[in-house]
Image 1: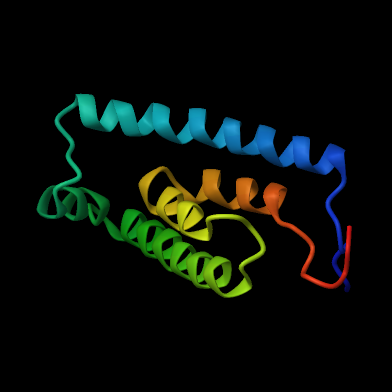
Image 2: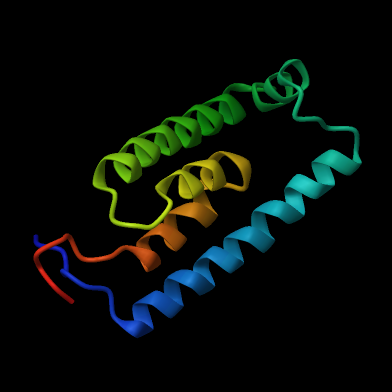
Amino acid sequence: MTLPRTVSRVQRRALRALALLALVATWSFNLAYFTSGGSVLPQVFFRDAAANALTTAITLDVYLAALAFSVWVLAERRVRRPWGYVLGCFGVGLAVALPLYLANRREPAGRGR
C-alpha cells in the first residue's frame, strides 16, 4: 500500500477537526482529574496511571507511541519547528499532536507541491 504524497484540503480540515475533538475529549478528563486532587508530580501521576493492569497497559502504550512519534517527527523534519510537536505530544497529548502534525506536513524537498 502506498500513501498519498500530499494531503488534500479536506483531509487537512478533517485532521484539524480530529485534533480539536481530541483536545476537548481528553482534556475534559484531565481537568476532572486535576480538580479532584490529581497532579503531574511523578509520584502522584504514575501512581494513578498504574492503578491497575489496564491503566498501566494504556499508559505504556500511549507513552511508547508518543516516543515513536517524537523520533519520527524529529527525523523526518517535514514541519516547521518539529520540537513544538514533540512538546505538544507530551504536554497536551498524542491524540492532539499527531493529527496536527499530519495536517501540517510538507512535501520533502525536491518533490515540489
